[in-house]
Image (spheres, rainbow, N blue to C red):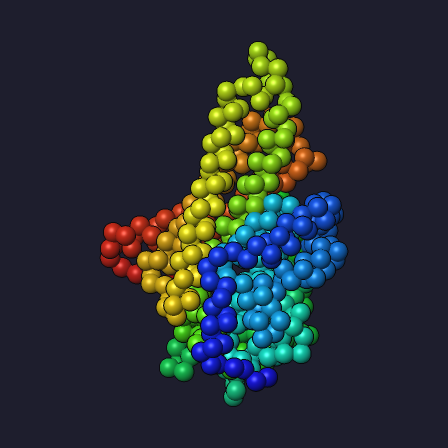
Length: 407
């Protein structure tokens, strides 16, 4: 495939800027009734039903981050976050599945064009799943690595054609480092292993590969990617490939939390407008000051979470458009913002369920599923507040020693 790298092409791609694409977001909003209709079935099956996957694909919502040269949207971070929030408001697992597939697709855009062509050149509808953890060891041979391994928590893997999997690999200097390799269709299988209390329909099962040869052009080292040293040849013409690696792969979790927070507000507020308050003088919760304050505070927390996420998106997108890579402190702040988003939404949803009454915790109540989804989604290592607070605080104070995680 011939790729244009002239500056006029860069101007075309830059047109997306940092603002959300309302048309794409509207397509996500329009799918919410369909997603809700199939949410319970997906929860039982442990994966999204084909009708939902097909609808997402038909509306271009699984190719948000695919480059325009492969007929993708090449959307900015803000648009991606807002789409994910719309999907998660209908069903957390649907938002999460779309999140991981789109993020893995964006990761793939940082590989050489040869590797990208192998994914999308013949089939622009191809999709990637990803597991960053190096759950395998690669054996170095001429031209690449032979990899065998098992990678749990591969969200959306059943809907993916390619798999980006982490493994330990020998570097040119003789040392060993964490690498990511792209596995082609037919080189990996899926083993059912995902049986959580929340986010049940994400299909976060285990990817298995045996003695797969991964050529060098389909391998990148994790530490290089963390610092923005990507192998793509198109950074001058495709600003999205200048985006910071881990912040781009972290801010997405905020979109899921925001959507789940909105879902809890929608469901709880509707219930509280008509629910009584047993044992009190209030015949309806809507007239109870306690419930009024609870709803106001919960709404403010979800709104604050959204504002934090949008700030992070703006920082990522503006830097990418300038061709600059976010510095360490800015990258740590994105992770911290996402962690705080998790805290805010968890607090809001906890309060709303208690206000809505005991029946909100019944298995058959959608609010209960939202509550479980918020807890499971907020437990992801890149979303948990504690580690994010630790890293950001260390940088703000100039603490001695290395950081405990990459940012």
